[in-house]
Image (cartoon, rainbow, N blue to C red):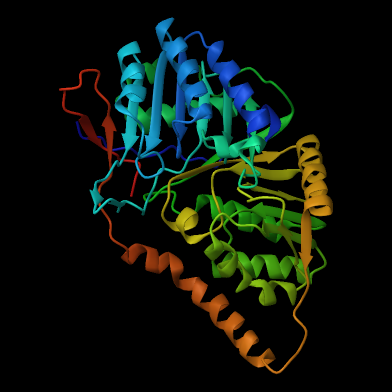
Length: 413
């Protein structure tokens, strides 16, 4: 069945929301599993990574129990991020009634996954249309501390209020298509009861109509900044305009701080980011490297009210190729709490990067920084030259002999 999906425009502030910051898997997983255990009607879950480890098995148990008591359960995982789930793991869910789908599963060549580009990178849960979760945390054991030194530092939020209706509407249409009849029975956004004082916006990135929405909101906030900016992002290599706004904010006296990986899960991540250090440091941006373990967060705050939490990194994949989702939050209490947690990180777990002293290679280093900075302005154009195809969403079938059902993924590249 062919679907033509046009995501809803996500640029409207909605009042009356409540956000709670969830730091790492120790806070995130119990909240999500508890919400699923209390679901009465519906669970919508999207994730980039689902591994068949202790965390994946806990999620499996929660989804299985929900489906067995009659809850409508929809799961969408990414084919690149979640490639090795067993037939038993998926089949038991499908047999219980879970609608389990894989975004663009792709095929292997000589054992290698080739479907690297234009991934479904979102991490969203909506339960009964009333409570939502969004952030950067996947369903894998490397998001809890007992995984060891490679355990990730990450963030998500629990959401209540009218913005959950936007998340709900989006996830249903992304998974089920615009012809989903049940959407007409959902509570409207304007009719959703208020749960707090935060204004919020649900913002997505796709390869159709919303190609730069998340980056645009970042740049608008940087342009408006008057006192402080703190950005904590795992994979940092943004475009020319983003870097320019950071430099301009620092030069006009804003305290701009950037928290990046000092112990990266992939060495190239730090190598790429360091190419930008000179250019940022000379403008007055303060750079901190988180050194306790790999940083996986995608959060930021500006001044005393604006904040964002979501799945989007600040690199070419997230900003120009992948499907992403963030919430933008206007709330002093949430901003203050996030600032307190990030300040604790900078004080106790980071080392501050100092500008390199002048030396015989000064000119070469500055030339490299200048070249990288200005070449970055072209990466959105380069992204359009990369191979494109029509990703499909494949639905797992209950019977081992049944062929998978495939729908073109209209929200994809």
